[in-house]
Amino acid sequence: MLKIYNTLAREKQKFTPIVAGKVSMYVCGMTVYDYCHLGHARVMVVFDMVSRWLRNLGYEVTYVRNVTDIDDKIIKRANENNETIAQLTQRFIDAMNEDAAKLGVIRPNIEPKATEFVPGMVSMISTLIEKGFAYTADNGDVFYAVNHFKGYGKLSGKSLEDLRAGERVEVDAFKKDPLDFVLWKAAKPGEPSWDSPFAGPNHGKGRPGWHIECSAMSSHHLGQHFDIHGGGQDLQFPHHENEIAQSEAAHSHDGEPCQMVNYWMHNGFVRVDDEKMSKSLGNFFTIRTVLEKYDAEVVRFFILRAHYRSPLNYSDQHLDDAKSALTRLYTALRGFDLSDATVDWQHPQAARFKDAMNDDFNTPEAFAVLFDLANEVNKDKEISTAQRLKALAGILGLLQRNPDEFLQGNASIDLDVEALIQSRLAAKKNKNFAEADAIRARLSEAGIILEDTPQGTTWRSV
Image 1: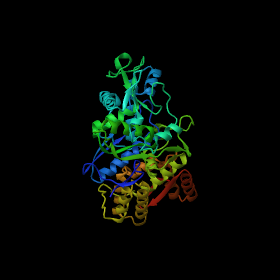
Image 2: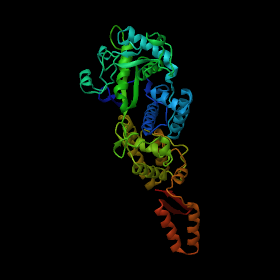
Image 3: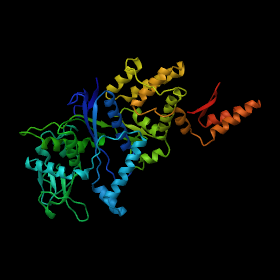
């Protein structure tokens, strides 16, 4: 029985899909004006893991992850680069997909772009105006009237009184209430715009605000009521809170809101040496920067080793630890024919793995199972145990490469290992054991362990 921690309920709840056997899941994606950073990597990998496990349980999953390809930062960056918005966003969409593929992320079923759904956003905004939840300001902007929605704050646990007393809110003279947020921005010179029926300058021309895009796209692809909505913890407020307000008000019937989502999931922040990652602190890392130094599977392993809701602390030491741990798992698989690796869920270790994953995707406990299996393989050399290890890890998108390829590719040295091995063999043949020992010691200092077997000498990195 799968249980998911529901941010809305603030507890783990038994997962029951709206439609038996099917899961509808929407995850807030990237704003594509720059290369993806580690925070984006965590969102991509975490919800890839979630969708993989749901499919493993037999669900037919429809996974939607949007692309924000129009906003203030995109417009600013395109102008700075003297390129069109379409050129800028497509370049970074391609880069995002390249990074995701390297991290073993399976593409979502649907990846809608915000610019493709502006008519749907205009329609939803019009409905909100008609139902009294939104208004057109004198400057042509359209705002959501927060105090008209009774449930505002239920996701974040913030009340309107608390927000007014202590939250920093955008000051805008055209708002009726400081907490109101923009749904539609009136056109400005030099910015892209779309037609709308809203009053204001330029015959209502303008562009959508950020929050409305996810409400429009999720309802279009998954319906007014769907199973799971995910994203980073930083989106819980105000973005997801505003999504609920927009969607449930727009889809209300006879004044009663229509529930938007059954389960809200949020992954934790990425921290760097125990500080929140930010450009201002100078501890900001793109995926590409990290992949210059570390194997992509090591990065995926590092992300999944922590529970998705806990903070993820990035440092070279933590990545080095992840590399060593993944090396231990791959080392256990060397020398086995694993082409028929499958899972027998009746096996105690497999059952323990399943229980862990069904407990709100408890990957730390699932990883403990993998290491226990690796220890068994190293001790007993049983092919069935090695196959079980590979098959279970494969559910998480790990350990699917040739072990020797991974181990040699992740050697922490700039030495010609094979040449040194041959030199050592020659030294041993000539009974120059001091030279042979010196070569072994040199390799050991560089992180390479030699293993002499009847079939010859093999090596692995640590």
